[in-house]
Image (cartoon, rainbow, N blue to C red; front, side):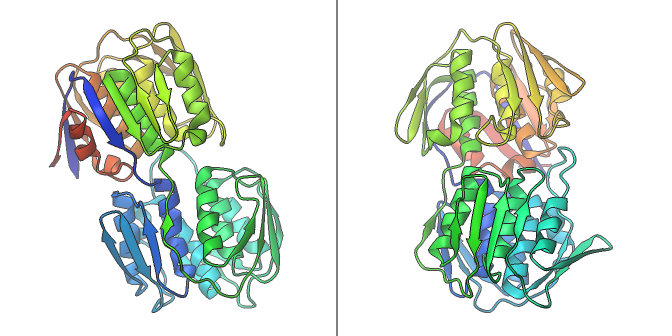
Length: 419
């Protein structure tokens, strides 16, 4: 495990470039095994989850290289093998191998997914969809066994909730199914559009990605062709925008698609953050007079659940009382007691986070129990007086591309050490 050591109180300035979207990348890498030729991905973030997924590919005799920001994946010698535990349990995105293996081989054995502990995230909608496509699904001592001995067939599937994971997993399975599949109440996140674009470029026939109804006409073959460039990470971008507003002296955040962040940017403007939004970058000016706002997370295009924690330290600088209600993961509050250690005036009542202005934060030893909570503590540490030590900092590395290099490039005093 790693610790992040932060000497707080230094104003940040300069520019930072956002990497490729984690939530696209961790689905596109499993999706690559659907291809019958080499796949090339560009703008791949240097995060721990990418390395974990490439290691899982190796277990299936799928070779890969990761040089600079480019990943090449060669699935031409892939073998169907069970993925029951171990590496699978280290990250939630491993469940995309269910849909990908099912689409490629008509069967899959994949351990129950791991990932951040942010409350219940059942996979019942995934299973419901696989069964509608003609597969049988059984839970064998913690490993999900999915088989479609007679092949997959198109179906009409209504998701009880607009699940990103279920939408993507069903896309991966349905692209090779016979006939047409219709997914209703589909999630609409930009990452789903990115994955559909990747699959379509390989020969899939997907329409409606980005809307709540997606239609997939199954095809027999998929082939990697043009290099696919992964979209910018809107969650990483939002994290640096919050950081720039909280402890910045003029920061330019580059490689942004601002339309993907409309709800978040609207809240920053409501708080009084001064920004210059350009075509693919946002410059954040020092913003001394901030006011509290109310945050309510919602499925896209609403305020992203992954951004409520990175925004929290900035809220602590604002005047008045603010609240955060996470309608998707109401138990996503493990960062709150850690912030209290640092002197924050913050509390939880009936899963509602209540915040008041804090004149200053004090460095302390805290724990990053999941990715976005770790980002919250990282920003708080940069704001605080003295030294902040973040335990379990490996969780931050799971979601943030070359974070130490980017922070030091802005003038932060930060380093990562082994525990």
